[in-house]
Length: 156
Image (cartoon, rainbow, N blue to C red; front, side, top):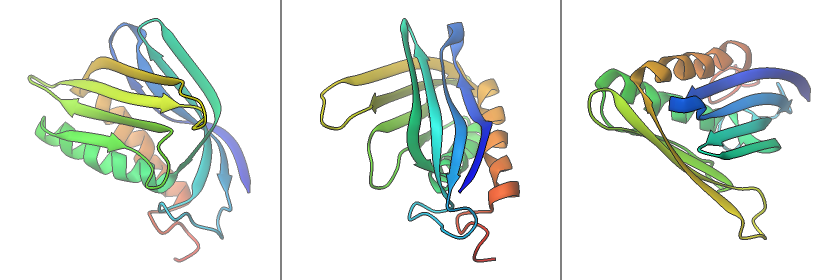
């Protein structure tokens, strides 16, 4: 288990709206990779959308899910078309999508449910644009320098 606290990415929207991930822990690094690809991680999730604010310090994710999202986001950024979706293969507590509209603008939509046994779900939407996407792509791709690609480092 490797512990650290670093910002993974912050996807900014207009008027202070955002979704961000802060890395708290990498589980099993470097010997145990994730079924999602890369390594399982525990993050702090922050969502600011309209008057709503979420700060959840035990979001389970995986570097592989972030890598898939980053790859799709890079295509959107380059083509000014399409969508990129963050989700885990076997969990659905957080899902969100960045969908390009016209003129380099994009809409971020998603849902977060802290506990699957309670019907307490935040559905959120905010606007952003192409200029906010590149830093997200670069930040997530920077993880590969330390933690490897979808296969992690243990298989190298």
